[in-house]
Amino acid sequence: MKISEIHIDLVKPSGGLVGFASVVVDDNFYLGSIGIMQTLNGEYRLSYPTRIVGEEQFNIFYPINKEAGDEMSKAIINKLKEVVKYDDRYSSLIDTL
Image 1 (cartoon, rainbow, N blue to C red):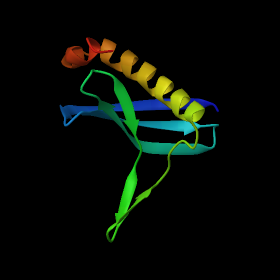
Image 2: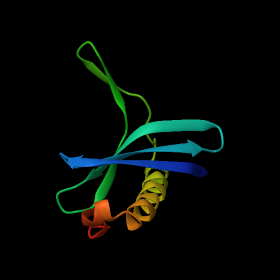
Image 3: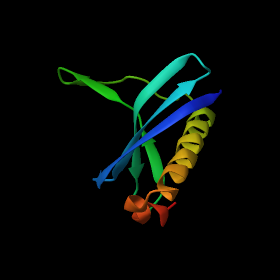
Image 4: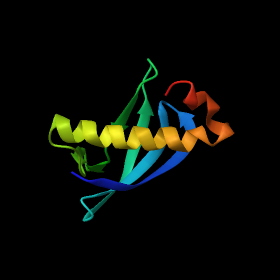
């Protein structure tokens, strides 16, 4: 799986959410609105978009195996490190990366 064109939009941290990511996969699919969450122990995890229809909640997309999920997490977290490294407004995130 080739993950490219990773874009990070940081937000004011709230409820663990620190930003959103978008990526291009295999030069064919754009995936956006991937939440970047900081856990209570300072680690990061991804949250994939869902849609609520009536009382049901549906996943829009998500990795179907651990290897794909790990690869996506690694690529996005590495890009997050690059982004916050050069922006003083996010120095509190740098300490946890």
